[in-house]
Length: 159
Image (cartoon, rainbow, N blue to C red; front, side, top):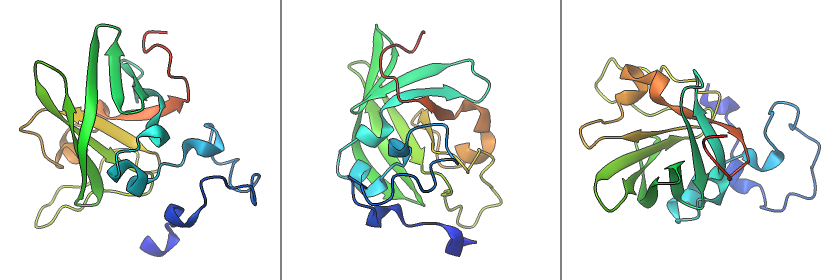
């Protein structure tokens, strides 16, 4: 199964050589492909856009590391690290520390010595904002709380 995963790191950022291949499999533009090494280096631009829960009940905007829930409520992604097959970071505001987890499409967390499984839609990029107590098991225990990218729009989560 891991042999079918394409290595997106080898693609140049300005992929002028193949603009038409593999674009039909996504409703988002060809720039949708996220780059975990880029995210780990603190460049969050590949996450920019509108993200929404699978049931459509909640939307957020990601704009260069800012997680915008509403004009009055934002968090900032910081200190990203790769752990157990996903990107884990802080999601900070001035009042409370929370966590941020991101898994690229076709990538699931590793659950060492556990019966947990990834119940999210692993065919898509997905992310979640967590409390301090929640670990990677959240991919199994709270799959409906994950956000999936629905557009490249970064204007308003309430539109």
